[in-house]
Length: 374
Image (cartoon, rainbow, N blue to C red; front, side, top):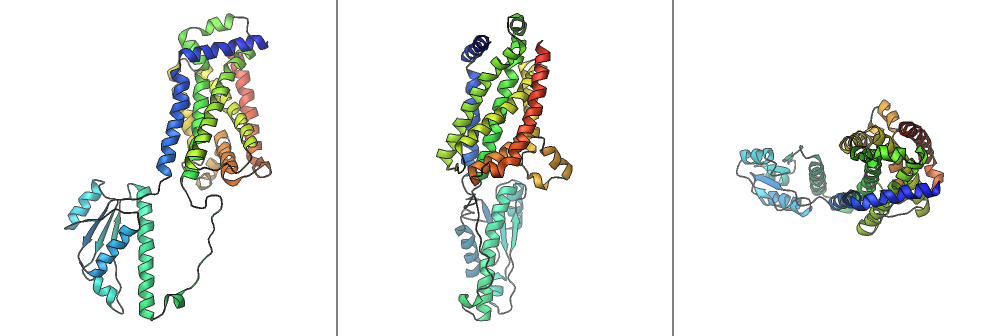
């Protein structure tokens, strides 16, 4: 039996050597996408285009504009002549924010009972830059408001000090978006790699007309399944190690938990996704159809992993459905080990859920594929 399985594994690797583009695409393509996502999200949002319409033209208004530029979120402001320029720039997406300073801004700042106001327009069509711009504006205006109040009360900054919360962030001290997005992207790329590789196992043979030849050879259905599965596991595991090393050494994503535990659970997760991919491979009549099914299933999984939107914020029915997605539990395990240093004493509910799903999906897959091959 072992010799027959080994001959099937050898056949698969010979085929991969002939069609080298497929494993190269899976390994390099996934790693390159992860690299681009990590690079894009590891950098803070800076140099957002800003336009200012200054009707005041006072020292106070110039101080406000300089303060906005000094936040680092905005680049050097462009000045508008009238409101139509701002409206046109916003509609064309040339700016992310606009500040309109009224004529009496300087007088209101200086007046003992003045109420200085400015109008800020944000390009909400691009929500992420808009949120960064909003935080920068709010931080600056709060500082200006505090200085005005201190000046009017005739107090020193020390006397005005009040309630200040002591804030400490666990697991991601700098609130780096890369520490959230890169492990999630790694998990998703691993799923797509294994699903696609497994989905092409039998669909490729059927499309090339060699599946019938394989079935009439002296191999049992179980031996064919194992022979097809081993190369998928090897390539998938190599892809996981490549991407894990890349995000750790290139983007400083920590591995705070047990590396051995991570490898064991990653292997288990690969088996779950392998089972799904083999079912897709058997029901697909061509490689193109298998590829489309992988995209469909992968995108559904993506929506319920918590990467795109928090599962906790979904309706209760969708939260229950998310518990049936293996990738949802895998991402929780991956973040728990990498960022929190968690062990089985913390992750056991996710591991148990992944194991149960693996047994159900794997058992169904094995029975379904064997029946299709017999």
